[in-house]
Length: 203
Image (cartoon, rainbow, N blue to C red; front, top):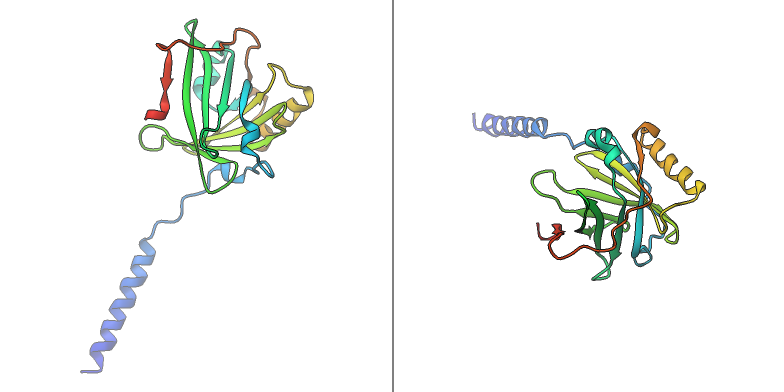
C-alpha cells in the first residue's frame, strides 16, 4: 500500500499537468504587419522634417464611403529625444486648420513604432516599409490586425516610379486600386491657432 501511494500521486500530478497544458490558449495569430519588411538600415533622423500625404490604401469602410471628402494633409516629423517620432499633422476640418499631435514610441525593432490609442485595442503598430528619405516614405499602420498603407512625399507630387512602388506594396497586402485613395494637392495648412490643436500625446 505504501508503494501505491506515490504512484497514485504521480499519476494525478501528470494528469493535472497535461490538463493544464491542454487548457493553454494557442498563441494569437500574427497580424499582417508582421510580414512587412522594414526599411533596411533605417535612419530615424533622416525621416525628420515636412512630408505631404500623397495616398493611402485601406479597407476602412469609412474611408471607402467618404473618400470624396479627403483634405490636403501634411505632417512635420521631429525627434525630440533621439528615438521617438513626434508627429504634427496639419489638415482642414470644416474649413478650419487643425494641428493633431501624436507620438510614435520606439520598440525593440528599429523602424517599428507604437502609437498609443485610447481603450482596449486602441494602439497602432507603425512600420517604415520603404523610404529614400529625400522624396518618399511608405508607412504601414495596423490597428486590431487591420492594416493601412500610407505614401508620403517631400513634395505634393511624387514620380510615377514611386507610385508604382507604393502600388506594389498595396498589392502585396492583398489590396487593389479600388482601396487606394489619393489626396488633393492644394489647400494645405501650414499652421493652426492655439484653439485648434488636438494633442493626442496626453492620452
